[in-house]
Image 1 (spheres, helix red, strand yellow):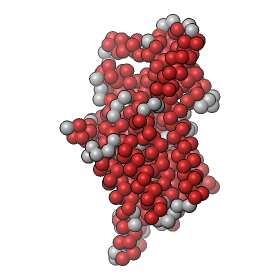
Image 2 (tube, rainbow, N blue to C red; image 1 turned 90 degrees about the vertical axis):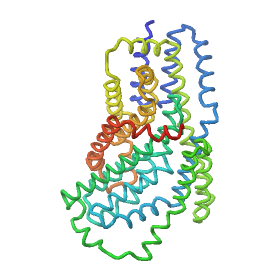
Image 3 (cartoon, helix red, strand yellow; image 1 turned 135 degrees about the vertical axis):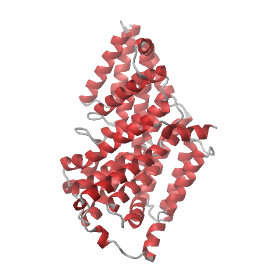
Image 4 (tube, helix red, strand yellow; image 1 turned 180 degrees about the horizontal axis):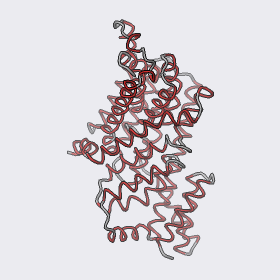
Length: 441
């Protein structure tokens, strides 16, 4: 059977059964088995190939990074750090028009360095940031959009679960991907702040209209205390990421240091209870097991593409195409954005990367740069209907305080800002590649 036909058949089947409700990991395993069986014609041999593949998929020390970073995020959230970080940014930025919206972005950017999961950030800051903005008469949609848009920074600013998954799928250094995400993450946060300030300046009613008058107050000792409260979190982030970028830690070791430091943080703040500790461990186990099962399924899918000859056929077809590499990359990014309307971000990576990466390697496009671009494109999917995982996470946290439609509308300007950042990174790729090149020398 023609390998291209097998590839298309399994891909279409995969998308269909996922949309019908089958778990992505199971869907990947089923379509992988079907593809190998159609190629070899021997069911038992197909089972043997994929069973050994599934065992080898996560039989690596590097994969310990997943539960460690998840555990760090869980402990840090338990410590109440999100509220402290938000209040500190509020003190710094409250004198600027739209400052509370910018504080939400800044706090989410810092919180991203200790969570790596956008949905978690969205749930936390829905409770922390919406009410203060509402009290200052912020437009409801702008307040919702600021939380939704900034929460996706968790997927871009290291440590990012998306970068871990992409690194495993593309065989790229997770540490290099983490470093590559720093400048784009900061850039996206800056663009968000510029966007909020611009909207607040053009239409002051969006931010209450009277903030500059009400917030012109003197700096107090209480402000200093508020600013210093999240200092322990800052030290934790500095040690963990500084050690990673300085070459002192591997990503796995950085995760272990971060998880231990976050546990100390909870103990020092006297927030640790036996019930809370056990709940944190269980949630870490659930999240980690889910991600690792997905990675097993994705590895089986990649093996199927290799056995059936799909990857080799794709590489041959690339050589016959007279398409500019940048055009091909843009097409892939548009596909990712479109799939984001129906799939969650990690599922998109697991389904599409085994098909896209051979093209990327064949045209000589930097896989680290492509990884950053793909993550941003997938993040857009977290904010777009009808799936919009971040939006539904916020709705779950807010209850009757906001409708799904209000959150989607509020997030739209931030989607435009994300597209602007993608264009900037395509025009100036050194923004992604510069830091990894320094760490490699």
